[in-house]
Amino acid sequence: MIRVGTLLALMAGLPMAASSQSGMVRYDQATRFDFQLPPEMARNPQFMANMPKASVKPMQLRFTPQAALFGQGTAATNSTAGAEPARVVMIGGGGGDVMMTREITPDMIQMGRAMGFMGGGATDAVGGAFTDLADGSYVEVREFLGRTFRIPQDRPTFAWKLTGEEASFLGYPVYQAIAKQDSTTIEAWFTPHIPVSAGPAQYGGLPGLILTLAIDSNRVVYTATAVDTTTPVGKIAAPSEGSKVTRAEYDKIVAEKQAEMAKSRRGRRN
Image 1 (cartoon, rainbow, N blue to C red):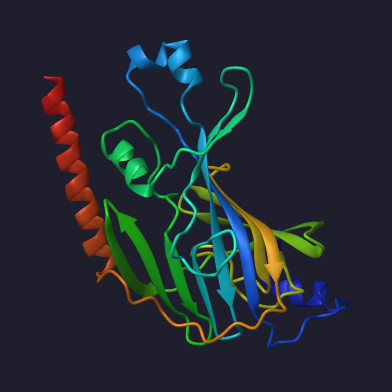
Image 2 (image 1 turned 180 degrees about the vertical axis):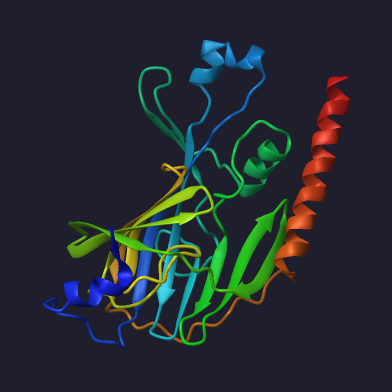
Protein backbone atom coordinates (compact mmCIF):
# COMPACT_ATOMS: atom_id res chain seq x y z
CA MET A 1 0.00 0.00 0.00
CA ILE A 2 0.99 3.62 -0.55
CA ARG A 3 1.18 5.97 2.40
CA VAL A 4 -0.93 9.10 2.20
CA GLY A 5 2.20 11.23 2.30
CA THR A 6 2.96 10.17 -1.27
CA LEU A 7 -0.39 11.42 -2.53
CA LEU A 8 0.95 14.87 -3.41
CA ALA A 9 2.93 13.35 -6.24
CA LEU A 10 -0.07 11.32 -7.35
CA MET A 11 -2.23 14.45 -7.48
CA ALA A 12 0.34 16.69 -9.15
CA GLY A 13 -1.45 16.63 -12.49
CA LEU A 14 -4.98 17.03 -11.14
CA PRO A 15 -6.88 20.31 -11.58
CA MET A 16 -7.35 21.28 -7.94
CA ALA A 17 -10.32 23.25 -6.67
CA ALA A 18 -9.86 26.57 -4.94
CA SER A 19 -8.54 26.32 -1.39
CA SER A 20 -11.49 28.40 -0.19
CA GLN A 21 -13.98 25.73 -1.23
CA SER A 22 -16.95 25.12 1.02
CA GLY A 23 -20.22 23.30 0.67
CA MET A 24 -22.49 20.54 1.87
CA VAL A 25 -22.65 16.78 1.30
CA ARG A 26 -25.67 14.58 1.91
CA TYR A 27 -24.98 11.00 2.97
CA ASP A 28 -27.04 7.90 3.52
CA GLN A 29 -25.87 6.22 6.72
CA ALA A 30 -26.65 2.49 6.67
CA THR A 31 -26.23 0.54 9.91
CA ARG A 32 -26.44 -3.24 9.79
CA PHE A 33 -28.18 -5.06 12.60
CA ASP A 34 -26.42 -8.12 13.99
CA PHE A 35 -29.01 -9.75 16.21
CA GLN A 36 -27.93 -12.13 18.96
CA LEU A 37 -31.24 -13.80 19.69
CA PRO A 38 -32.10 -16.63 22.07
CA PRO A 39 -32.00 -20.03 20.29
CA GLU A 40 -35.77 -20.45 20.39
CA MET A 41 -36.19 -17.22 18.41
CA ALA A 42 -33.30 -17.86 16.04
CA ARG A 43 -34.79 -21.25 15.09
CA ASN A 44 -38.08 -19.67 13.98
CA PRO A 45 -37.82 -19.07 10.19
CA GLN A 46 -40.85 -16.78 10.03
CA PHE A 47 -39.61 -14.67 12.92
CA MET A 48 -36.13 -14.36 11.39
CA ALA A 49 -37.54 -13.51 7.95
CA ASN A 50 -39.35 -10.53 9.45
CA MET A 51 -36.38 -9.18 11.38
CA PRO A 52 -35.03 -5.86 10.07
CA LYS A 53 -31.52 -6.20 8.65
CA ALA A 54 -30.43 -2.56 8.62
CA SER A 55 -31.53 1.03 9.09
CA VAL A 56 -30.81 3.85 6.66
CA LYS A 57 -31.03 7.51 7.60
CA PRO A 58 -30.01 10.78 5.92
CA MET A 59 -27.02 12.66 7.29
CA GLN A 60 -25.21 15.76 6.12
CA LEU A 61 -21.81 17.42 6.34
CA ARG A 62 -21.35 21.18 6.06
CA PHE A 63 -17.78 22.28 5.52
CA THR A 64 -15.55 25.29 4.99
CA PRO A 65 -11.75 25.47 4.88
CA GLN A 66 -11.86 26.20 8.63
CA ALA A 67 -14.40 23.74 10.04
CA ALA A 68 -16.77 20.84 9.35
CA LEU A 69 -20.08 19.95 11.03
CA PHE A 70 -21.72 16.54 10.61
CA GLY A 71 -25.22 15.71 11.77
CA GLN A 72 -28.60 14.30 10.88
CA GLY A 73 -29.97 15.57 7.60
CA THR A 74 -33.36 16.25 6.07
CA ALA A 75 -34.80 15.92 2.62
CA ALA A 76 -34.86 19.62 1.82
CA THR A 77 -33.09 21.75 4.45
CA ASN A 78 -29.84 21.97 6.37
CA SER A 79 -31.61 22.10 9.72
CA THR A 80 -31.60 19.12 12.04
CA ALA A 81 -35.12 20.10 13.16
CA GLY A 82 -37.64 17.67 11.75
CA ALA A 83 -34.93 15.31 10.58
CA GLU A 84 -36.08 12.21 8.79
CA PRO A 85 -36.36 9.00 10.83
CA ALA A 86 -34.33 5.96 9.98
CA ARG A 87 -35.89 3.55 7.51
CA VAL A 88 -35.87 -0.16 8.26
CA VAL A 89 -34.51 -2.30 5.44
CA MET A 90 -35.84 -5.85 5.19
CA ILE A 91 -33.58 -8.09 3.13
CA GLY A 92 -34.65 -11.48 1.84
CA GLY A 93 -37.87 -11.65 3.83
CA GLY A 94 -41.26 -12.72 2.54
CA GLY A 95 -41.64 -12.15 -1.19
CA GLY A 96 -38.38 -10.26 -1.64
CA ASP A 97 -36.59 -7.16 -0.43
CA VAL A 98 -38.94 -4.63 1.14
CA MET A 99 -38.26 -1.08 2.33
CA MET A 100 -40.34 -0.19 5.35
CA THR A 101 -40.83 3.24 6.88
CA ARG A 102 -41.13 2.29 10.54
CA GLU A 103 -38.79 4.47 12.58
CA ILE A 104 -35.81 2.82 14.27
CA THR A 105 -34.38 5.27 16.77
CA PRO A 106 -30.87 5.23 18.29
CA ASP A 107 -32.51 4.50 21.65
CA MET A 108 -34.09 1.33 20.27
CA ILE A 109 -30.75 0.15 18.93
CA GLN A 110 -28.97 0.98 22.19
CA MET A 111 -31.58 -0.82 24.26
CA GLY A 112 -31.29 -3.88 22.05
CA ARG A 113 -27.53 -3.94 22.56
CA ALA A 114 -27.78 -3.32 26.27
CA MET A 115 -30.21 -6.20 26.66
CA GLY A 116 -28.04 -8.55 24.62
CA PHE A 117 -30.19 -8.80 21.47
CA MET A 118 -27.93 -6.87 19.13
CA GLY A 119 -24.23 -6.73 18.40
CA GLY A 120 -22.28 -3.53 17.99
CA GLY A 121 -20.27 -1.18 20.16
CA ALA A 122 -17.06 0.24 18.75
CA THR A 123 -18.63 0.80 15.35
CA ASP A 124 -21.75 2.59 16.62
CA ALA A 125 -22.37 5.69 14.52
CA VAL A 126 -22.04 9.11 16.15
CA GLY A 127 -25.00 11.47 16.13
CA GLY A 128 -22.93 14.51 15.27
CA ALA A 129 -19.37 15.74 15.02
CA PHE A 130 -17.69 19.15 14.82
CA THR A 131 -14.11 19.47 13.64
CA ASP A 132 -12.06 22.65 13.71
CA LEU A 133 -9.82 22.05 10.71
CA ALA A 134 -7.52 24.91 11.74
CA ASP A 135 -6.57 23.89 15.27
CA GLY A 136 -7.64 20.22 15.25
CA SER A 137 -10.19 20.49 18.07
CA TYR A 138 -13.16 18.14 17.90
CA VAL A 139 -16.55 17.76 19.59
CA GLU A 140 -18.57 14.57 19.28
CA VAL A 141 -22.32 14.43 19.89
CA ARG A 142 -23.90 11.23 21.19
CA GLU A 143 -27.54 10.39 21.84
CA PHE A 144 -28.16 7.83 24.56
CA LEU A 145 -31.60 6.82 25.85
CA GLY A 146 -33.15 10.22 25.29
CA ARG A 147 -30.17 12.25 26.50
CA THR A 148 -27.73 14.28 24.40
CA PHE A 149 -24.06 14.39 25.30
CA ARG A 150 -21.26 16.42 23.76
CA ILE A 151 -17.76 15.15 24.19
CA PRO A 152 -14.83 17.51 23.48
CA GLN A 153 -11.64 15.59 22.70
CA ASP A 154 -8.65 15.46 20.41
CA ARG A 155 -9.54 14.93 16.78
CA PRO A 156 -9.34 11.20 15.97
CA THR A 157 -6.40 10.29 13.77
CA PHE A 158 -6.17 7.37 11.37
CA ALA A 159 -3.08 5.79 9.80
CA TRP A 160 -4.45 5.94 6.27
CA LYS A 161 -2.72 4.02 3.51
CA LEU A 162 -3.56 4.30 -0.18
CA THR A 163 -4.33 1.10 -2.03
CA GLY A 164 -3.67 2.50 -5.50
CA GLU A 165 -7.31 1.92 -6.45
CA GLU A 166 -9.12 4.81 -8.11
CA ALA A 167 -12.61 5.30 -9.52
CA SER A 168 -15.25 7.94 -10.24
CA PHE A 169 -18.12 8.74 -7.89
CA LEU A 170 -20.78 11.44 -8.31
CA GLY A 171 -18.64 12.85 -11.09
CA TYR A 172 -15.52 13.17 -8.93
CA PRO A 173 -12.33 11.14 -9.19
CA VAL A 174 -11.93 9.20 -5.94
CA TYR A 175 -9.06 7.26 -4.40
CA GLN A 176 -9.26 4.41 -1.94
CA ALA A 177 -7.60 4.58 1.48
CA ILE A 178 -7.59 1.94 4.22
CA ALA A 179 -6.98 2.34 7.95
CA LYS A 180 -7.11 0.10 11.02
CA GLN A 181 -8.66 1.14 14.32
CA ASP A 182 -7.95 -1.56 16.86
CA SER A 183 -9.32 -4.63 15.06
CA THR A 184 -11.69 -2.63 12.84
CA THR A 185 -10.96 -1.97 9.17
CA ILE A 186 -12.07 1.37 7.70
CA GLU A 187 -12.29 1.85 3.94
CA ALA A 188 -12.65 5.36 2.53
CA TRP A 189 -12.95 6.78 -0.97
CA PHE A 190 -12.02 10.47 -1.08
CA THR A 191 -11.66 13.12 -3.75
CA PRO A 192 -8.76 15.60 -3.84
CA HIS A 193 -10.94 17.79 -6.11
CA ILE A 194 -12.61 18.96 -2.91
CA PRO A 195 -9.46 19.71 -0.88
CA VAL A 196 -11.07 19.66 2.57
CA SER A 197 -9.73 17.15 5.08
CA ALA A 198 -13.12 16.03 6.35
CA GLY A 199 -15.73 13.33 5.97
CA PRO A 200 -18.72 11.73 7.68
CA ALA A 201 -18.80 11.42 11.47
CA GLN A 202 -15.33 11.47 13.04
CA TYR A 203 -13.53 10.39 9.88
CA GLY A 204 -11.14 12.63 7.99
CA GLY A 205 -7.45 13.38 7.79
CA LEU A 206 -7.14 12.66 4.07
CA PRO A 207 -6.11 15.26 1.48
CA GLY A 208 -9.63 15.48 0.16
CA LEU A 209 -13.26 15.04 1.14
CA ILE A 210 -14.46 11.49 1.91
CA LEU A 211 -17.48 10.57 -0.24
CA THR A 212 -17.96 6.94 0.78
CA LEU A 213 -16.81 5.11 3.88
CA ALA A 214 -17.33 1.56 5.14
CA ILE A 215 -16.54 0.41 8.69
CA ASP A 216 -16.03 -3.12 9.98
CA SER A 217 -17.01 -5.13 6.89
CA ASN A 218 -19.91 -2.81 6.06
CA ARG A 219 -21.45 -2.79 9.54
CA VAL A 220 -21.77 0.98 9.07
CA VAL A 221 -21.61 2.52 5.58
CA TYR A 222 -21.75 6.19 4.59
CA THR A 223 -22.56 6.92 0.96
CA ALA A 224 -22.68 10.45 -0.42
CA THR A 225 -25.87 11.05 -2.38
CA ALA A 226 -25.36 14.71 -3.33
CA VAL A 227 -22.57 17.29 -3.22
CA ASP A 228 -23.23 21.04 -3.29
CA THR A 229 -20.21 23.35 -3.56
CA THR A 230 -22.09 26.35 -4.96
CA THR A 231 -24.49 27.31 -2.15
CA PRO A 232 -22.73 29.64 0.33
CA VAL A 233 -21.99 28.15 3.75
CA GLY A 234 -21.91 30.48 6.74
CA LYS A 235 -19.62 30.23 9.72
CA ILE A 236 -19.70 26.81 11.32
CA ALA A 237 -19.76 26.72 15.12
CA ALA A 238 -19.29 23.89 17.58
CA PRO A 239 -22.53 22.35 18.96
CA SER A 240 -23.69 23.60 22.34
CA GLU A 241 -26.67 21.35 23.06
CA GLY A 242 -26.53 18.49 25.55
CA SER A 243 -24.46 17.73 28.61
CA LYS A 244 -20.74 18.32 28.32
CA VAL A 245 -18.85 15.23 29.52
CA THR A 246 -15.48 13.60 29.04
CA ARG A 247 -15.15 10.37 27.07
CA ALA A 248 -14.55 8.45 30.30
CA GLU A 249 -17.66 9.96 31.91
CA TYR A 250 -19.80 9.11 28.89
CA ASP A 251 -18.50 5.53 28.75
CA LYS A 252 -19.28 5.12 32.46
CA ILE A 253 -22.85 6.39 32.02
CA VAL A 254 -23.43 3.97 29.14
CA ALA A 255 -21.86 1.01 30.96
CA GLU A 256 -23.90 1.60 34.12
CA LYS A 257 -27.18 1.90 32.21
CA GLN A 258 -26.43 -1.18 30.12
CA ALA A 259 -25.64 -3.18 33.24
CA GLU A 260 -28.88 -1.98 34.83
CA MET A 261 -30.93 -2.97 31.78
CA ALA A 262 -29.23 -6.35 31.47
CA LYS A 263 -29.92 -7.04 35.16
CA SER A 264 -33.57 -6.08 34.68
CA ARG A 265 -33.85 -8.45 31.72
CA ARG A 266 -32.32 -11.35 33.69
CA GLY A 267 -34.76 -10.64 36.52
CA ARG A 268 -37.77 -10.90 34.20
CA ARG A 269 -36.53 -14.22 32.84
CA ASN A 270 -36.19 -15.78 36.31
